[in-house]
Length: 110
Figure 1 (spheres, rainbow, N blue to C red):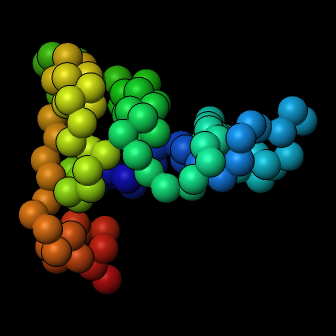
Figure 2 (cartoon, rainbow, N blue to C red):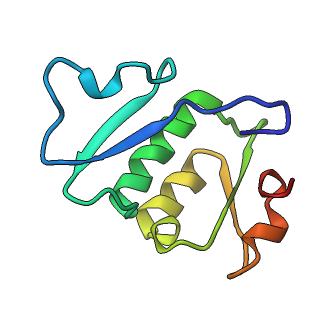
């Protein structure tokens, strides 16, 4: 979510080997959401890279209009492929220090 209230469509991670052919898992999903499958539903570098590509498609950063992406310090956000992709596509990543997300991410504070 950004400061204007705009959301990037959701990326769903389903813990399974392959997606159902008739799309039942995505019934009721927000428009333009995407889904991937993997044996674990946990985030990893490969899944985050796919999400970052999805993010770029929706925010369309440019050299004159770059994007700041604030993330926690999860290991999947620090993989070299992710960092290179972000750098090459005008996405500036800011990682919060450990154990500070609840204080530093404005959407986490009520």
